[in-house]
Image (cartoon, rainbow, N blue to C red; front, top):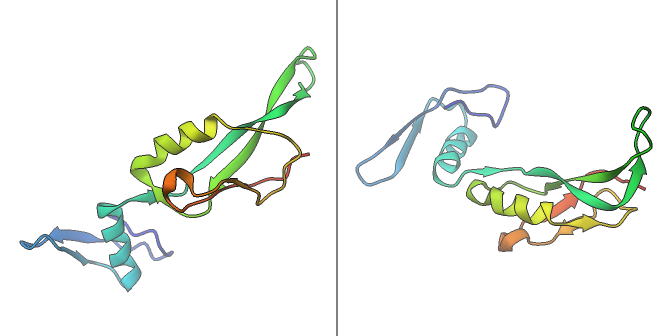
Length: 125
């Protein structure tokens, strides 16, 4: 496994001892060992997505004047449990925002009871 917590990118080796604990080698700092343990035992990811907006915008040139739905980008404020990302995306894809919306607005507070908020990442009028 390659550590991604800093630019060094240490090559990590992980072995499980008889007692069930993990032994991490190859890391040049304590962050590498912590990264390996977390990635193996409870992996997390920052989740980014878009949600629908209630207003529509006119299509660009060549679009025949059709109206297209507007999308608002969002992300989790911190890393989210990887095994629950699908549930979170289902929740986010069901949301429809009313414009205008400001960057930093909390879109979902305490998403799925994890204590992690989802925020809007771009102001859109």
